[in-house]
Image (cartoon, rainbow, N blue to C red; front, side, top):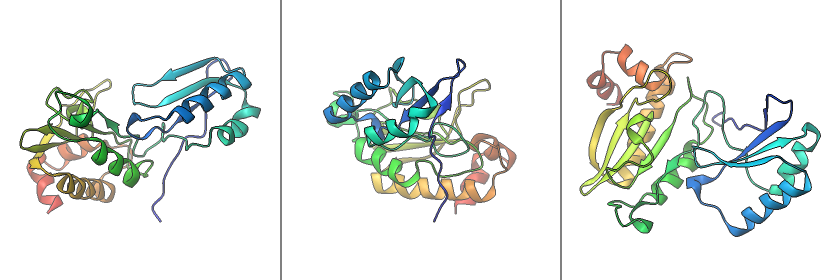
Length: 218
């Protein structure tokens, strides 16, 4: 079984703790929201924060309450830290957005189920966008899919942070099934060949660029 990581808690500067809930594709239910509100009040938490990665963080928790809070919530912790696949960032797609050209939710949820928390050489971010407006920023993710009228364009090797890297285009005109196939090839090749701490973009550069990376996938 492949090793996976989740983040049970994160210690804050003031000595309290924060937890990050995994919210696949950013979709929540009324029941989940009620539980979050109940936990916030019951344990005198300080902040509920919607994160940049479409997750929910509850901050200002006492260490002794962490286990009980997870039990009350009944949801999975997110892979918010560590050398692994983080939560997949997904836009509403054409199902919910008038600008969407491709359906995104099914693809995003499938990617989340397959890879969330999977241990890799470095942190690994995935995004799915339903149109070239790219609200989820697939061109600055390790693996990104952007919807067009002809299917999805696949980007690889992007990153933001202190040394941003614009992703390379790996393939275009992909169906959902082809996106999943290429995701598996990309992640498998990266896991097998990259050095610890080496982001996908840096790995692609180290082997001579995108054309050499395409050969590796073959």
